[in-house]
Length: 170
Image 1 (tube, rainbow, N blue to C red):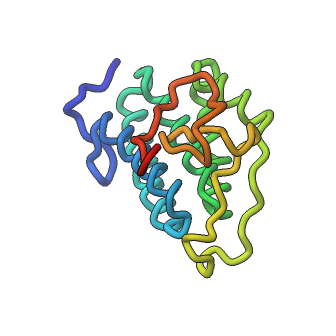
Image 2: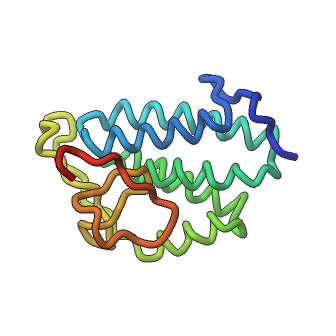
């Protein structure tokens, strides 16, 4: 019923830990450089294929809904129409297969109140320094699910979000 830690999934042959780490790393890199949206989206799609493979082989593994939740949140973060479409697809996948899981219930609550930032007009032309902060309906102080704060570490929500390593003087 549970996938062994030394089994590998998808075209990238990712382990369970590799899937989680890849999603985390993609989100953290995107948090600091929105100009890499296309690379983030492409890598997320390969990671999603690994999750599909994992689910196919171990449909009752309790960690699958967590991975689906994380990849859905990553897609929501990426400011492109392709990523928004994929986030919508991934949410439908979660609700079809794992609606009663804790992650399925959390995603339903999140989507009910979430307000996504408008997409930039020229995604490829915007310099990295002009990239907008991660949009959140909780305000600019909301921590990302991927460990890096949007602007300020204060007023973080309760939950499993981790603190980033301190920058210079913080």
